[in-house]
Amino acid sequence: MQGTVLALDVGGTKVAAGLVDSAGRLLARASRPTPPEGTGEEVFAALLAAAAAVRHGDEVAAGVGSGGPMTFGGEMVSPINIPGWREFPLRARLQQSLGVDVHVDNDAKALAVAEAWVGEAQGERNFIAVVVSTGVGGGIVLEGRLLDGASGNAGHIGHVIVEPRGARCACGGRGCLEAEVSGTAIQARTARPAAEADAAERSRTGRLVGQAVASVAALLDLRLAVVAGSVALGFGTVFFEAAQAELDRSARIGFTHGVRILPARLGDAGPLIGAGGLAWRALGHPVGIAR
Image 1 (cartoon, rainbow, N blue to C red):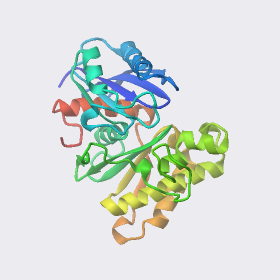
Image 2: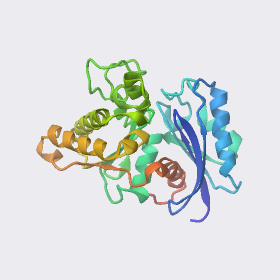
Image 3: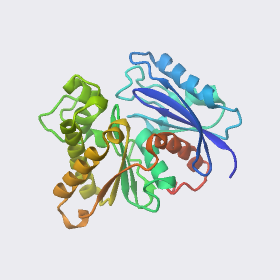
Image 4: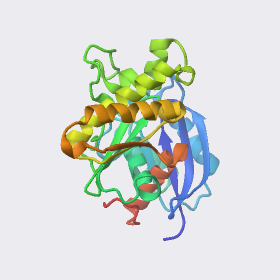
């Protein structure tokens, strides 16, 4: 199948756009800051500006990865870390503005598509992709299929509780993984940007992610966790060594022995490749995950 699709990635810090071909190659990219206190229309305008910076006008479809939660298919999105979007009609608004079919899903589910297609999880039928960035999200593949759940929101590992008496989460809970290890949470706790975190904080972040992955691996019989996001990838070896050590300590039941936690192979290109993969998948093109 020839041509390109428009890929859009919506996050709490930035919105990004790219062009992705049918081989999973990111051919162009651009980004704009997410207006931190912006209205829904201001955030949408930033997303359209990023799209305009890369579009040729001949794209065959568009795929979008956005923070959640959302209603099925991204008809209404309410990302926890984008206060300006509450029940924002993302898919319909984009389809009207872009003039092509638009396919929307959670950004971490999009990452799972990317890593199964051309990344670290190629050939793996049971894994979780985790994003540790401004927020924390997850996308789960079981028996070669992307797990949707009743409302399309399956995979929200960021709201697995890892510290029962921990920090209050924006979702209303307490001690959620997102409230403890996201870039936002780290800055709130340390009064420094996450990028400036010391070794102890980086190790703690890895440990808590490993703890959450151990629970998910036991629940769903997964063999691999692929982790991306500016916090996880920025923290590097300290993070991943701590995460694997905690996973080995916590995953004690026999079938969880040997579960691996690895950095996403696609790095910061993964979310856009995954968003593109959502569109190619909807068009029937093989991306390593069944429809």
